[in-house]
Length: 378
Ligand SMILES: Cc1cc2nc3c(=O)[nH]c(=O)nc-3n(C[C@H](O)[C@H](O)[C@H](O)COP(=O)(O)OP(=O)(O)OC[C@H]3O[C@@H](n4cnc5c(N)ncnc54)[C@H](O)[C@@H]3O)c2cc1C
Image: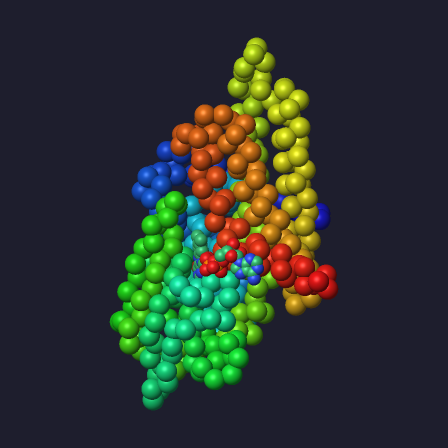
């Protein structure tokens, strides 16, 4: 698609910001405690001051009133620029759900938090409920003017640094497994909640949550009691697009760093990029990324045009393709950079680590293939 002059300037400004503030490994280490944090509160605050967080949210709630094309431009350039703000993408998904279903107060609170550089978490997954989310068992039992919650959540991104957690709980065990599920807005510092980090191959990003007698006032329900599943399903295309745009940015970064490397690295008396075997592999990566870019903005444009509920197949395709391309590009780049691709100093090992999780979360890519396959009548 063609971007307006303002959109091009916006993308260029985000790219320039990233170059200036987190362009080098030393700069990124400085704002992430040596790579141990996946979110930099400092950079989030700076981005908030620039008015770039939550650009797609209505002005009435503190956003910029722009659309998803603009939001994707921000995500693409921020992840191309290696800005350590992965939790922002989760917050964006959470805030979209509140915006669609929440009370006025919930909307104001969450969008203000997101646009102000705060982080918001989403707790859907449980030890026994991953791809099959209908298996959620964490219980919320009505008690007077409150709900009492008991159970465990797992894999909750950014819960340890979030202000609130959007949580899916079972309020009724009768009916089918997708009935009786309810969404709650839970303060991350509520009594009875224990948040424990999960050790992974990345910086600290995900957590186990243990809820013991957590008491939430009845007005913490987001949307309607028992309607949680349907509410979540309505927002999936936006979530998939957010992950696709982040992955597009990450893929571009891997390609750009690879190009810079193969242009200067010489072996056998010539640059390695001049070997046809290398050049053709890079040409394939560039082609895949160009297609991803066109597709992401087509989906974003359709969401902005109000077609969100008619693009389940395309939303799934965007998430599937962009996350696979980002992973493939990072792995190819590591191989083509030889030993240097494996060294932390050159950055590609980080690109590989970060590219491995997106094909798993946000609905694993096998599930996206199921959605696409079923949409083809299979
Ligand atoms: C880094 C990271 C961040 C995350 N953040 C969050 C978060 O913020 N909030 C949250 O709620 N969750 C989060 N998750 C959890 C994530 O959504 C789940 O890991 C994902 O849904 C898969 O569930 P699972 O891990 O239980 O795997 P399973 O569902 O057990 O699946 C295991 C494998 O089997 C495959 N599989 C399962 N069912 C089918 C099927 N029907 N057909 C074909 N293949 C199938 C899967 O694709 C996968 O490859 C995160 C996970 C990671 C790794």
